[in-house]
Image 1 (tube, rainbow, N blue to C red):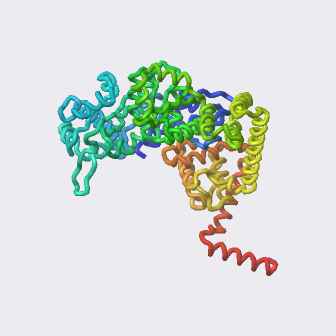
Image 2: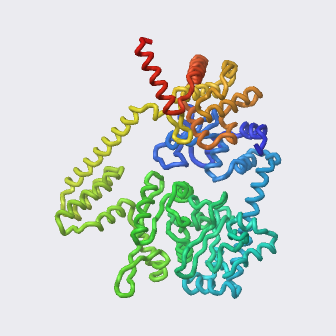
Image 3: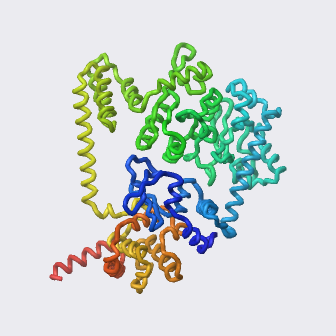
Length: 593
């Protein structure tokens, strides 16, 4: 490892995972553990557990687990060395000089961020250069973005040409490899290198720390691609970036607005809605939701008013359903096109046509998620026809049945019944039937799962699936007992890692046993730099399972015996092996064996 094990042991010895986790989310002590709402998935009942004696966390809902370092890695999106460095600073420790690999990574990251900052300055300067005149005019005339907000968001121009940025950055001391690493240049087929962005409006993407982590860009006509982003890198991950968050995080408004486009964000900020953010051309993800939960309790969805925008709204509502964020939907009216046709309108269009006051009125009238979904259902039916009224009420009942509150179900059933000129009791009866049907389906699914216990014993991650479930259960038992009382390693003579049927369990056994032999701490937290995230998740779940000390020695002996017996039997690797074993068993049965 780049960071010495001895230093990691000292760091883990100084950290208290309860203090580390409590800095991010509230915990409540219940029994031996501390509990809270999991920050890694959406839940309303706490299933996130922190065990102070074992210095581990584990979520019984999503399965994530590990020690303090893993927690900070996941919460802050940091690689292992950076999470260690952050925690070491909090603990008053100086991280030893890194090995070549880690030092190179840190230097590369620093260089990319510095290069991005220099590139943003270059693009910004181009707005005052004749080579950027077309982009400057587009910002001013077409987009009507003021000089103040153009500067606030660092808008710039990538001039037409193949190497303007390359030449400018070369004068700053950066070579072509640096530009390729940052996603600012592209290697050609003939070995040459050219600017990635040419004749485009440039928008730097700035994270909440103020670092320029990448760029998005836009053409000024109908050519494709319309938008072009920095490629995915260690510091630019679209699934967890919210454009405009660096400013929206300081808003005094009571909520956030989520729009589709980067230009929409700038236009709304300029109009006074400094609580607006956007994803980077992607659908909303769980990473985005976790990020939003840190800054707001209410989110107003304001997507384009076309079929794609409606689909995106429905997906976002479903994703946000389990979160603590209240959801409202702002529906933009369609705009009249030449000839009287109606067409798509986004937030940028609406603000420019009607102004901030009209947009605020739409905000005030925005519907909650249930109202929005029911209004979408209403639009699909002609309520002047009996058959369509019946179909509408059935579709509306599907939405109402998913509402958790009986009060909400009663209110919306009444509204839908009134709209379709039907009895509210009939709608509630339909809703009740759907809810009972869903309960029956859930129960049948649970029963089917209970009938296949072997499947229940398999890890969540398919890459860790066991070839021998019986042996794997015993292997987990050995690890659980060894973590409870490391001195019991003395009773495991003759049990080697190669006897384990699951490679990742054998690896953990080997690492823990080696630490015990060297007189060092035996804990899962000590293995965080050695295990893959999915391996750590499973082993944390193993460590959380109860194991009385009074029966530990007996359990260990039984597990050891099972592992060795299963190993002697050998793994069945092919259909031929299985067929041979079946034939042998048949012969043994035929001869009374």
